[in-house]
Length: 277
Image (cartoon, rainbow, N blue to C red; front, side):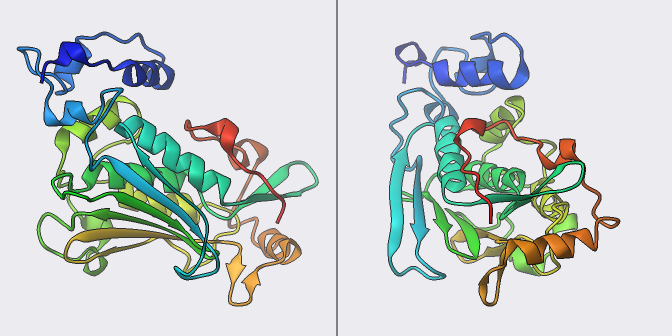
């Protein structure tokens, strides 16, 4: 397919915003999106502005309660990968809470989830999913007590991620060109660090409890990432006073200052729904 008939304006603008560098159309070839003779690669089709790849989709659903019974909201997006990441994060932020309490010298954020960890998770699913599965898509399912990301494609080596030590899983990229583009956009760091980073980002939150670490699971044809609501207990949402008292008693173990507690991640900052618990 002739690349000259397609535009990469969204990719170029995102590159400028993320890296603070000027875009050059020569990057399309160096990134592996366009061949030397001006043809789009398979990866290039996933980054053009008018992406028409049927599998380039996400299904976003906010369910009532803890199971897939009734839905509060459900939406499907088909777009290029940059926009899918944006739309997915928008949906998650709109249907999760970021509570806070006022401390003597700063505001202590007590979010349900680590935005940065979920961002890493969605990036991971968009990069490593199997795009050869016709009708396949990434699912974002939000429940009262968790957020689940599901994508087509199991582990490349046939192992089960739940049986592996995530700190020792080698980098095996199903889609190396997509991974490289996301790296150039500063959406991911070194290969193989995503699973570890998601857990570490979650564990750094002041309201984190053992047993609330992100969990990973693979089945025959799917990969699952589950993030647990840090402000949800066996009896439902935990009162903010209870969370604050627990955090106050462990501040020495989880030091928090105003700068770190309000740090943003560079995706759709203006769309975050903030609420007290």
